[in-house]
Amino acid sequence: MDGEITPEEVAALVEDDADVRIVDIRPEGTYAQGHIPGSENVPFAALTRDVERFAGAEHVVTVCPHGQSSVQAANLIASYEGVDADATVQSMAGGLVAWDGTLESGDDAERDPDEGPEAPF
Image (cartoon, rainbow, N blue to C red; front, side):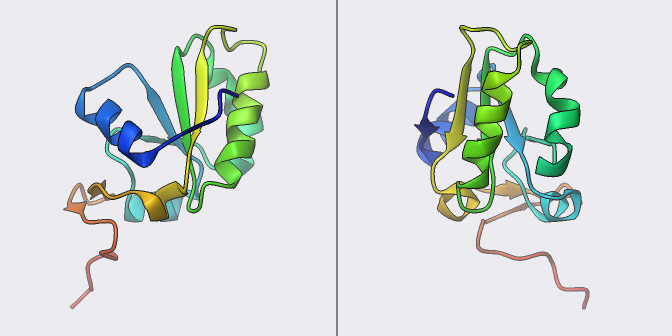
């Protein structure tokens, strides 16, 4: 693993449409409620089974709620033999609680990070 990346640096990568794979390791239902635009969901429990998805990736950033589990996920991805030795694998420091940008949701609406899912009424 190549350490941590700040939420601001991740936001710049998203804005620049950089060649980076942002991997949200939260459960599918939580991911659907709001996630970083362009991120993909690979729940932590499925990561060991699905780690080959990152073979050939040049830059991977893992994301979780508070930036702790994503460190473990980044270590797992970085240790996979299919990931290039030159690949950059990082964890987003502070997790989604530190994210200041908008979030996409399963209903394709963008929300501020402090907004919960829309009320049903």
